Length: 213
Ligand code: FES
Ligand code: FES
Image (cartoon, rainbow, N blue to C red):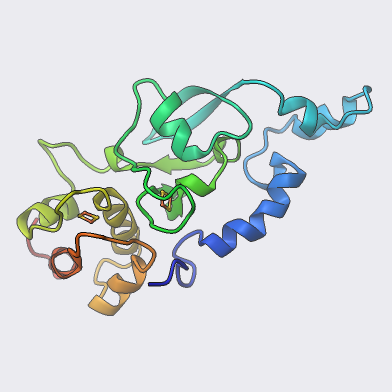
């Protein structure tokens, strides 16, 4: 199964690799604080501002599920690790499986678009609206798609489930009447080793057709 997301639905692995060049050059590529360029130009040590700024831990503010969260991270910390290991309380609904952009288990929304959190640096998520599975609903008040997954037995071990739901939610937000082909394309990068695909698509189609809420 392809690990590339189609069209403009999300940040694909290829998108990330392209973006990696920019990431390597500086956080201005995504969400750089306004004074970052000044940091670089003010540096009189001969060492680039980026290099100076990327030593040790630094506290950043991530906008997660509508709230500002202070998180202390290292420059190498992925967004996935920031959510699971450094946020307090931790946000462990986003799953770590391959840690390499191949399985989609870590899918979150970045400015409304699905993205693999294991392939993004936490530093580069500053200034972006992030949404995780915890931001969709609660056990008492699930989102329509979460409820539909329960109604259609759309999960077994559950490791792929948050990522599936985040990818499908992004598609349904964008295209509430999505058909099966569009829903399948939306989570083409989400792998399920338990083989729950038929139930997953039943659940998503039910929401698209206005049922099972
Ligand atoms: S854990 Fe991120 S894509 Fe698999
Ligand atoms: S439910 Fe187990 S990997 Fe999908």
